[in-house]
Amino acid sequence: METVETDVLIVGSGPAGASAALALSTYGVPNIVVTRHARLADTPRAHITNQRTMEVLRDLGVEQEVVARATPQHLMGNTVFCTSLAGEELGRLRSWGNDPLVQAAHDLASPSRMCDMPQNWMEPVLVDAAVARGTRLRYSTVYKSFEQDTDGVTVVVEDRLRGDEYAIRAKYLIGADGGRSKVAEDAGLPMGGKMGVAGSVNIVFEADLSRYVAHRPSTLYWVLTPGATVGGIGAGLVRCVRPWNEWLIVWGYDVEGAPPDLTEEYALSVVRQLIGDDDIPVTIRSSSAWTVNEMYAESYSNGRVFCAGDATHRHPPSNGLGSNTSIQDAYNLAWKLKLVLDGAAAPSLLDTYTDERAPVGRQIVTRANKSIGETAPVFDALDLLTPQSPEQLLANMESRKEATPAGEKRRARLREAIDFKRYEFNAHGVELNQRYASAAVVPDGTADPGFDRDPELYHQPSSRPGAKLPHAWLTAGTRTLSTLDLGGGGRFTLLTGIGGEAWVAAARAAGAELGLDIATAVVGPGREYEDPYGDWARLRGIGDTGALLVRPDLYIAFRRADGAADDAEARAVLGTALRRILGRD
Ligand code: FDA
Image (cartoon, rainbow, N blue to C red; front, top):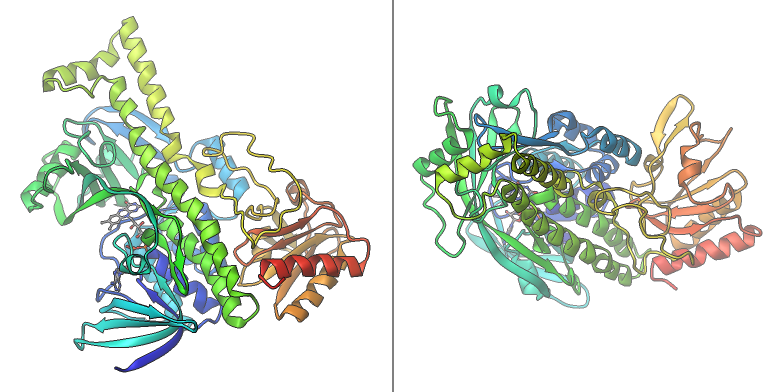
């Protein structure tokens, strides 16, 4: 059998595989992607793209392309609850950072804006950039099996064009092959949770719905209508794919029974029920059935085989965490593979991938499933959960308009229930508060201060090792740039202030000794970077002479609040920290 060689073989061209390829090619690591189909994603699937993902894409040089194609944040922002699009509106929630207070938090948290980028638009951006930077991509190529030894992994793939099989020999294999991952199964990754919790149907269609949505622009319209509590994701959902002509409906079915027969007639009947206006012309594009899952891998790797994305966490679309987490997994793994392949880090650095990402996977699976349950109180506020005649259901909804104590109580319960959905549609903390604890993070001896406010709703920046580098706007001459722009690019970065020059010299010395390219930045008046607003001084958690060592994925690896006694101490302290992070101590 013919054998092809590469450093990293990636199975799958979804958000996880495509972004792994993009990051590896950006860092100069040879890689091949094999993907089952003759195309990328052909349906919109994941869409909410949060600030952390946009920061990753910013570092990988494709943020502007995504911004140019995505639906902007201000059109995402009214989550509407209604009886149908043409029917009665029950309430709205300012969502995805569009509440003025949350918008301010978004502006403060990141240089990047959240947006809505359908997966079938996102994948080509990632894949095109990856291929332009060196990724070799093979469509119609199916992963069949792998065998690993101490030096590498031999993977058998089937070329569906030629109808034959060949082997690819790689130093590492990434299984980014989605929710039915054969790589994860063959690697024997231990999984917690369960699959098939509820049944769902996606219906993609075209219709000009401007008259029902343009005055309340949103990514999501939730429909409370008979049948909407069966299976699915908590209610009938009309999701905007492209304003205001392309749509995707998510509708549930009872997972104990067979999935519905997805005829055009069935799809049209669901679309008509949720729009509530039979005169609107509708073109059905596709329908597919899927199940809501609640499953996460407890380990993301076995030897030289690593899994990322839905291969390791399977959950409903609530909170929009699917492709975001997948892209962030890949970003966490790519720089570690690069350093290990270069010989700059010991293979043990790769163990930190599971240590850092598995808790995140578990957290987001739990959060996404919890969000489904939190839609029930909206129905309950209107007394729609118990089986009743359609007339009675209608009467219950109408009773919220009554000038009676019962009517007032119903109105209050409905407002509260809708407001509580902030945990799904405005969970800024879920999106940005991840803290890593692993051997690739050097504790600085400070106690974990925890969170001042609800950690799911509110982002709290921190410079404590294991936290994401806080964002602050700096200047360099006439240029304005984020602290995040000082790091990334596959390199470690050392940040210090006036009087911290010993750390800069130490970073250079450690880089030369360990074979690393370490960027350095001194922030202060008259230096290369200035902090005119004083924001960085407030956020950095160190004095002018202290130091932060930032990993290539923009997480803080090491912090020293004050200056070193002298150059020798700075060298010793930073060298020890780096050796520990790289597994070379
Ligand atoms: P993903 O499934 O995207 O990619 C897997 C890749 O592996 C594909 O390229 C596939 O062809 C390839 N592959 C699989 N087996 C292979 C093999 N044996 N050999 C070679 N290649 C193989 N999420 C969300 O947040 N909001 C939403 O509305 C939706 N809606 C939605 C609808 C549908 C129909 C699906 C299937 C999924 C969603 N999702 C979603 C989930 C979201 O799409 C998902 O979280 C991400 O795509 C995960 O990205 P991955 O790259 O991990 O897997």
